[in-house]
Image 1 (cartoon, protein in one colour):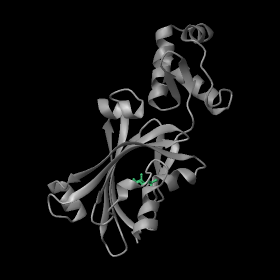
Image 2: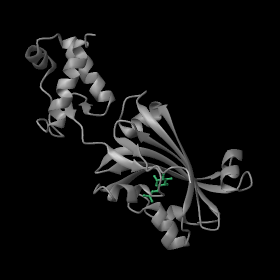
Image 3: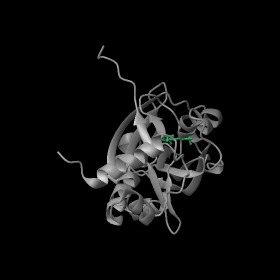
Length: 238
Ligand code: GLP
């Protein structure tokens, strides 16, 4: 079986990235130069590059060129961590850009998840989460106002929400129910995350509880597929 030309080029490019010949941040040579070097058409080179952009190994910067991407961030999915903790564990500086903080009435779905009555007040907090200043995820978090009145007064760009809940409200989250599901970026999400509409995202849905089983948070997070990888530890069933 013959391996398509663009796959061969793609593998050569991967080899250069993985061997360290092209470290993160390297600007790729122009398509026509690569095409000349490999003796193939520009279309073939472009196809190989497009594949590597989709895999998250390369990053296109509009009007500037194509660069070798930083290695993906690892998000453990088998332990309960805040975004801040997950980033710090990898030596990445966590951050947040606040998109919205508002009080909304609980919809039926929210009321069910957070065990409230429909219409009760809930904080809806939308943040773009940053790792080393780069957008990693878009978070939509919901907290019952009666459990943490005044939560919107804290600096939620600088402080971890889980830390605020712990330190200011004595709400310690110890358990979460969570699911992961692939999805594609819609326009608003794409703009917030600085990616193209239709890019792959991982939707991460969570309800987090205190030790007494009180649900405190319902969150829907959208993680960039090109920047984040999900990992877990598995054991044989007990
Ligand atoms: C993770 C969780 C979210 C939670 C967030 C809190 O991203 N999936 O549900 O809201 O952490 O992060 P931090 O404490 O850094 O604000």
